[in-house]
Amino acid sequence: MITKLVMATNNANKLREAREILAPLGIEVLSQREAGANCDPEENGSTFAENALIKARAVYEAVKLPTIADDSGLCVAALDGRPGVYSARYAPEGQHCAKLLEEMKDVPDDRRTASFECSIAYIDDKEIKVVGGGCIGHIGYEQRGTNGFGYDPVFMVGDRTMAELTADEKNEISHRGAALRGLYKYLKERFGE
Ligand code: ITT
Image (cartoon, rainbow, N blue to C red):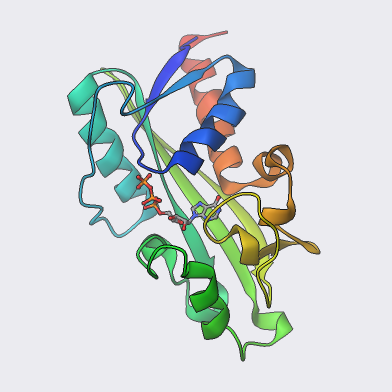
């Protein structure tokens, strides 16, 4: 079984969550910086999978070690799936939740469904694999909680926001947790125990 992966990301929260989820499975995650890469390729794909591949390829070419990349975002039904692949670019830093709440202010309870989506691309010297995960919830009316990052304070699962969950609770149900567990299954099938 593989024991080390490089993660192609500049997002420290994604890196932390990937480490929390993969460490108990015996996989150490190095940041791209720790692996000696400094990449920030243009994410011009039209799907999460395409963008994950763009990021994974860029870092793999630099480090030539098994590499993963996460592309993820929030899809809101009432907004026809926006912000989707534009989730990071939806608003200036720190203003994403406020902008979303403003856009959703007249949307009634039964039309506030949303999902977090995540694609993880894996590349090594022989194979490329993309796995995905999703998490369904709804958009609240105010920001609540201080855990997590990004849209977590407005994304409700049941009666709590994702930012009110502990790290373990989030990882158990999150889009990223689901995708990384899919990656682990693939790696196990390929490399054995
Ligand atoms: P890298 O491309 O360097 O990995 P990024 O933050 O730019 O980092 P993305 O392009 O994949 O990542 O954008 C994803 C955005 O979607 C991210 O900035 C968050 O705003 C949001 N997002 C993704 N996963 C999330 C999560 O678990 N909780 C809250 N928001 C999330």
